[in-house]
Image 1: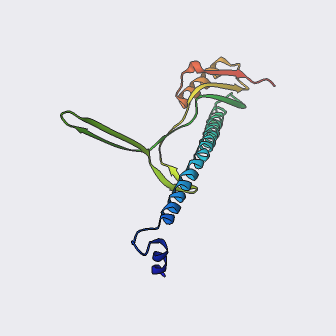
Image 2 (image 1 turned 90 degrees about the horizontal axis):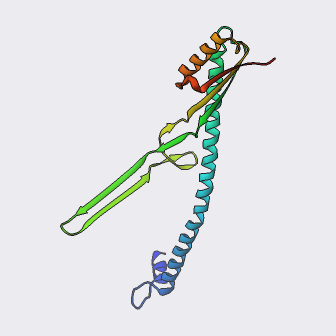
Amino acid sequence: MIKEIKDKITDTKTGKLKTNFIVAIGLIGIALIFLSGLGSNNDEQGDKADNSIVLQNTDVYRENLEQQLEAILSDVQGAGDVSVMISLEGTIEYIYAEEIQSSSQHKDTDKSSDYKNEVVLVEGKDGKDALVKKVINPRVHGVLIVCDGGDDVILSEKLINSASAALGISTAKIYVAKRTK
């Protein structure tokens, strides 16, 4: 059977591959290159999807901060019912692991230098994913605290100092207001 296939793709007189076979392989190669170019549009759509995921993760991060701060501030005596709104600077930033390859050739007259930087890919549940090296959460820009005892100056100072310590931000970025009933 292998001999029959070999006879079909090689010229019996010269022993070389038939021209039709070579042309067919070339056309298949061109088709594969063309099809791989079409896949780049999917990558752009993937980037857009990744951006929406980052924004959703940023919203989840902000909501978790708000809930934790509300829970702790509501335990301060006299605060009563507490609502918190946090504004963030930017979004969550992902730092990906990279493989860096560099080489340089220095001769007396010729100088050559190559640099290659590739993101490390690992097998994920949906195929290959970039390996995340570090996640940087956005910084807190400001905090609004609304509570029942917000008109008490001493309580407001306690809430501002508590939020400042919990979030690691300046007290100037925190405002306390009294809840209207």
